[in-house]
Amino acid sequence: MKIWKKPISLDILNATSANTLIEHLNIVYTEIGDDRLSATMPVCSFTHQPMGLLHGGASVVLAETLGSVAGFFSVDENSYCVGIDINANHMRGMRSGTVTGTAVALHRGGMTQVWQIDICDEQGRLVCASRLTLAVKRHKKEA
Image (tube, rainbow, N blue to C red; front, side, top):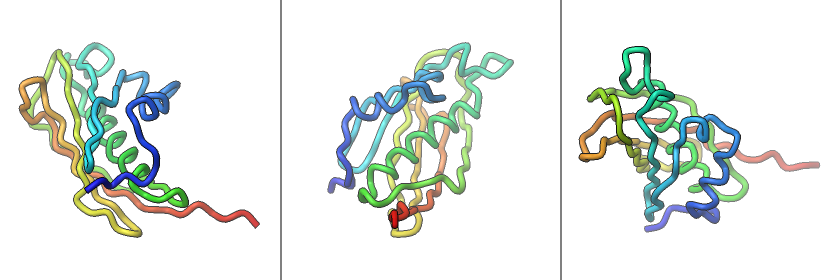
């Protein structure tokens, strides 16, 4: 069952990244499923920590990006989502290549959403498992 309530496409999503941290980290949306959203991020100098490994914070940026954007597109036009909690468990170090994150909703309620974001290497091995909680907010009506 499709969960998207706003017009969504890879072109729309990738265009929203211009002049943001998402563009700086070269995160690219790659797949929109009926109930999931995926994006890739390179593992290279600008996503490394000083020891030459994928920075855990870069993984968290990928996770929060996917969950927040998926949340936004899964609520009606009068609503939007903001992150209120994120956690990440880092399973595997990487020095090079590409990671792919995929966000799937665990809960989409009227006041909160919870998204599971799994980040895998090119062989499909889990690099990071993250869970993001979003608050669902309503746009204020103008008087």
